[in-house]
View: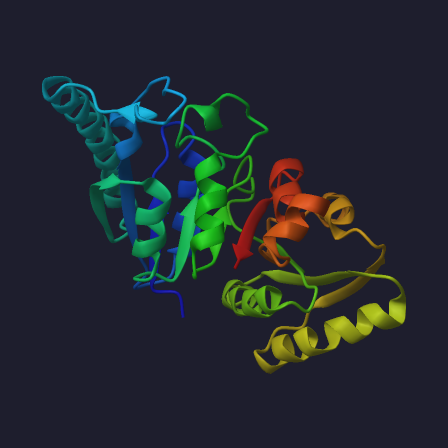
Length: 286
């Protein structure tokens, strides 16, 4: 049962869509949202050109006075974000807590995630590099997905206009990550009126049905009757976004980074392609 949500809070207005999904997840009594802003310690480093023998470091710290002034400014900005979030929660009657920490953001978030059931993130708005292109995904998001033991919801362009999530799509390939993601599908399907679509990409119909069989049984055992679909193909990364465009789910659920890092470098990652090419909100389970 979902009891606690970790919300790494992005810059406004990028945070708004993630908030909508966090509030939807928290609509049942007893669900708590913990908002976190991490001040990046890398902000206090100045890149320099090192010598050939490596004697000079690649980064140095600025003078203490400048560092303190920068920390004070970043802390003030972080608290403004946190306070705005707390006011919204108070207006909606949603229990929340807030925290500002200093460290390496991905590492702090991944450690903190152990205390919560799910992480909800914006697509962009955490680093300047991630805000340069609306179609890009902030580098922090990928780092958190790779390291987190908890599922990570990455908010899409906008929350459904109808005001609630009505359809989820589960992309299932039989991997251990996809198996773990089924528990998330069950949790979301417990919301009234949510329709579940179970999809796999396979070489032929028979192979696809064999892949889907255990997932279908798991969902049935938890009182969820999915709409099944086998898509014929050999490259899920090129197919899933097209299927999502057709099914038009409010949330797409899938396992994350199911292949080895070497295979990802050589052949690409389904996770990265879905994040960069699919506008749907995605929940990824490592």
